[in-house]
Length: 294
Image: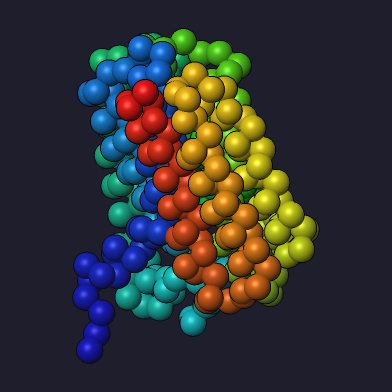
C-alpha cells in the first residue's frame, strides 16, 4: 500500500524536531511570568511564528539538500519525501516559500502590534537565516555552522524576542539564558549529524560532526547540556524552593542520553534525536510550571 500524501508532508515537517521551536518560546513565557512581563497574545503569536519558521526551515533543508545531491535513497535518517519520490521538488519548493511567507505575515503582525521598528530587521534576518541554513553561496549546515545557527535562531532569537515583545527589557542575563536554551537545541542537531556522518562525508557535506568526528561530538553534546544548565540557573533561583527539581531531572536525562549516544549508530539513533528534543521541551515546560506554582 502506498503512502498517503498527508503522511509524506507530515514526515517532511520532522515532528521529532518541533519541540525545539516550542521550547524557546515556552521558556521565555516562564521568564515573563517570573518578572511580571507576560502577555498572552504576543506569546501565542511568537509560538505560531516559531513553529512556522522551523517547518519552513525543514522544508527548505529537504529541498535544497536534494537539489545539491546530498540525500540518497534509503538513508539512515527519517525518510526524505523528495528524494524518495513521495513529493515533487516543485511542490516542496512552493511549500517552503508559502510556509515562510505565512511566518513572515505573522511576524509582521506581531511587530506591528507589540514591537519596535528594529524588530522588522530582526524578522528579515530570521527569514534569511531559514534559507541560509540550507542554501545560498555559503549554506551554514554544509560548513560546520549548523549548531551555531540553531543556538542563534532556536535559542537567542525566540527567547529574547518573545520576552521583549511581552514587555520585558533586554539584559545580559536574558541573553545568557537564551544561549543556554539554544545549546539544548543544538544537541538535537548534533544527534542528527552524528547519525548521518558517513552519508554526509560521502557526498562532501561538511557538518561539524564530519569535521570533528563522532568522539568529539559526543563530548560537545555532553558539554552543551551542562553549560545550558549553568546559563539558565539564575532564572531557576528566582522561581521557588524546589528550583533544583527540574534541572536535576534534566541532568539525569541528559546524562542517560549521552551514554546512549555512544552505544548506538545508524537508524537506531532516530529515537534518541526525538528524546533529546523532548527533554529540552520538558525543561522549558518544567520551568514554566515551576514559576506558575511558586
